[in-house]
Amino acid sequence: MPKLIRLYIVQVVAGFALSAVFVGLLLWLNVANLYHLVTSSEAGLLAVFLLWLFNGLVFAGVQFAISIMRMGDDGAAPPGGKRMPGATMAPATVRIKAPSARGRPL
Image (tube, rainbow, N blue to C red; front, side):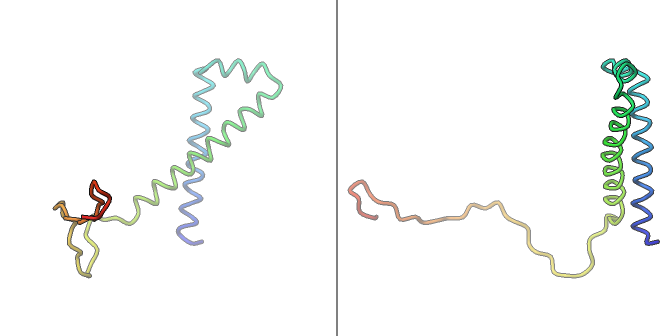
């Protein structure tokens, strides 16, 4: 299996595990009376599943993005090539022909 695919699968599993912990804490701490809403409704199990699923998608995406962004940069400048000079903050003179008060160009 390619390394990138394996990395993606590991990060997705970690994201959904974090989602399970997050949803468990939401229910255990009864945030916004969520535990009561889930246990007193017929669709409570579906609501918990969807909460876990959508949070898992978000957490998995964030996990994968963080791992990808941390991969390649070792802090060194890229090798070779000519360096372009940096931009200067010196003002440039631009001449504009504007009509005079009589309507003729200056």
